Image (tube, rainbow, N blue to C red; front, top):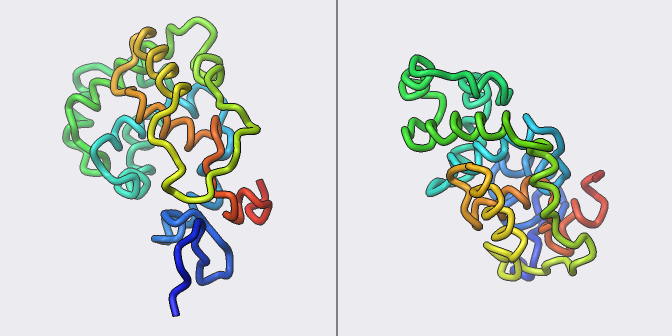
Length: 198
């Protein structure tokens, strides 16, 4: 008998997770060990900005499975190195089957590195000023999780004003969720309730 969906789903390992977090092994590891945990550091956040931009229009699983390829192609997402990428790097990236070969997104990643490099105060400070209220109620179902919030709209606006590309409100909210600026683990998910060793 299948249990009715009323929030988090019960996995084969006996742990309750957000529904998407139990759908594949890749998602299970990402959900349990990374998604929603605070990420700090300009390079680490630059990686997430880039990956969220590459994900636009695709499944996150596609990006997750190519993450090491992205890291290799983009010099470990070190802002200073990516900011120096030139035409030869651009052509190399367009030919790299280990990443998503989208010209506009590749150009945006390089341009975004240049913006991040020259940003007063750094990328970490810019992004984290838009963290959501940590005391907001936990969502009980995936249907209660928004796609856009006032904070993500403000973050997208601030990033665009600074010169970043591919950072609309929906992408900004996905970034906030992934990097722990908001905790959207469902109320009865084991990560939120302490079983995930947060």
